[in-house]
Image (cartoon, rainbow, N blue to C red; front, side):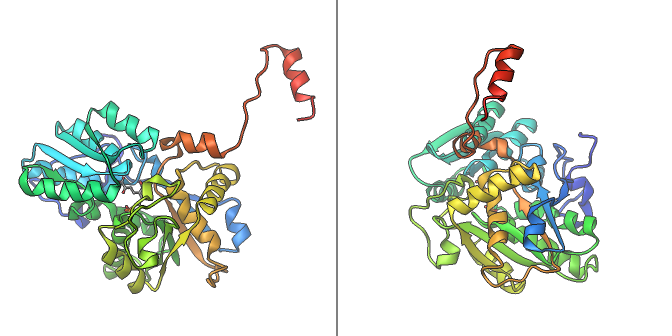
Length: 354
Ligand code: AN7
């Protein structure tokens, strides 16, 4: 056990846990809610916070839902788990699978997974099937496989994933003392927006908050089926985590949007990269491109007619920037300055007017 309570221990009474549910944890949850230093002022919000889900044990929000799915799989006596993934789900499945001796099978779109995520699945010892197709194709295959094999599906179509993931909303309300006005969140397969909405509404019905936030979901423009109103056959975006053309929780995401009087909109890759670099350079926060879609969306809200004045906003930064070192290398546009390791050479370089 980790010294910090994981999400099952912290929120046991709100989760489908029985005496027979094993104590599963890698110390997930309880992630930092960090106040904006710079972006907030430029937008005129009252308060803007970033929830650093990249601080979870495998570097993404997926650990919250995975811990619950794994606990229930163990409780049911399962020996094997399977998922389709754009990378983070497979890293989380592989980690918890390794820790609890579950054979782990992950299906990923070949050549489209960020390096850090693939490295994780490899290191944790999962069996990795790189499929000739998209994430959506991989998920379709997985849903067929679980019909005929005795293997537990741990994608977010598994309701226990949503249960675990809703704890992110609980943490925000517990820390702020009230729900924020707006929650900005990237949307891919749409499990997370579904889970946050469930968490906020549960907390409100228990009297832990008076209000619920407007749910502001953002897809990448090249992978925006919910915004466009139809599946995208060949989704394309720099934010590979959300390169998803036919989200499994499509209708639940629309319900979260409508019930909360929020919106689901889209952001261009250039806007994602701008937000990604602003977060790193103005806030000191390195998240992955998909996560920056939440902030890119927030930055666009005034143009879309949403007044941010006096509003409390939380952006969910779903994954750690280290997941995708290739994008940082390509998009930061920083060149290394090579130099001999002596004071004269260093001073000469520094004084050369660069
Ligand atoms: C960093 O890992 O779908 O809308 O297979 O990795 O709940 O899908 C990842 C999704 C946002 C979108 N940010 O969340 C997967 C996968 C990051 C992500 C999303 C993902 P959902």
